[in-house]
Length: 273
Ligand SMILES: C[S@@+](CC[C@H](N)C(=O)[O-])C[C@H]1O[C@@H](n2cnc3c(N)ncnc32)[C@H](O)[C@@H]1O
Image 1: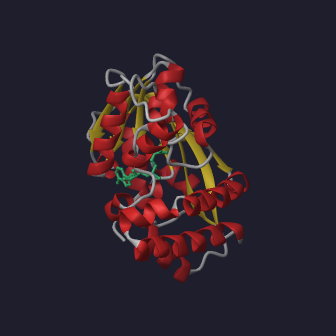
Image 2 (image 1 turned 180 degrees about the vertical axis):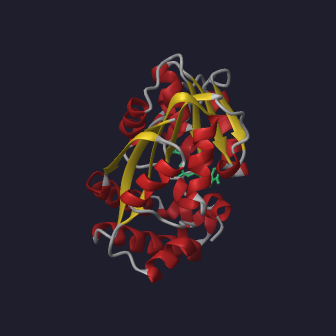
Image 3 (image 1 turned 90 degrees about the vertical axis):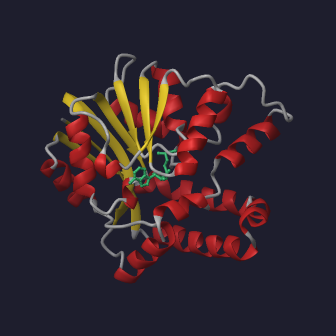
C-alpha cells in the first residue's frame, strides 16, 4: 500500500477530530483552544506524555526552533508550542493531512507559532542548520531510505542540535511474510532493530546516541487502540464502506498480534548533531 492511501483512509482524520471535540462540547466548536483537541489529534502511542518524553530528550525550550518531521495533523506540534513556548515547523507529505493540520491550527489560533509545510521527509526543504531540535513519532517506518531521513535531520540541525524520535522496530522473530504484510497493509518498510537504528544514527553523523526499547510501554496501548477503533467501527464503515472497514479491522488485529507476540515493538532514539 502507498503511504498516502493509508493515511487518506485512516480513522484518525480532521473530520473525526472535530466530530469528537463537538460531541465532547455539546456541539459547540466556537473559541477552541489547542487543549480541546489534544485528546483526539495525536496519532502516535503514549499521548501527550510521549511528546513530552521526546521534548526532554530533544532539550526543547521556548527559544528552540523545532522541526516536527512527518507531523500528521500537527497535534504534537501544537502541544509543543503551547507547553514549551517554542515555534514549530510541522512537515507533512500527505495533502489531506497537511490541509487538516493547517485547519486545526487556525481553529485554535496557533497559526503564528506552528507553520505547516507540505514536503517529503527524505528531502527536507530547509537550509542547513535551520533548527535546534527535530522530533518525529511513528513515521519513519514509512520511509524506505532511513539513512537519508536521518542524514537530512542532521543537515538541518544547528551544531549541537538534538534529534529525538520514536518508531516501530522489528524484533528477532519477525518473519519475511509478516514484513510483507505490514508493507502491504500499513506501508511500513525497511523496519529497523534497536541496534541497526543506533548504527544508522552514527552513520548519519549523530553523536551521544541513545536508544531505548519501549515495546513494553506500547503493548497495552496498541491493545486499547484496537478496542477504540472497534468502537468506532460503525462510523468508519459509514465513511469508507463495510468491506474496507472489515479489512482494516482484520489487518489491525494481525498487527496487534505481532506486538503481543513480541515480534514488533517500539524504539525511542535520540542523538546530537
Ligand atoms: C503515524 S502518523 C504520525 C503523525 C504525527 N507524528 C503524530 O504523532 O500525530 C505518520 C505521518 O507521517 C506522514 N509521512 C509518512 N511518510 C512521510 C514522508 N516521507 N514525509 C513526510 N511525511 C510523511 C504520514 O502522512 C502521516 O501523517
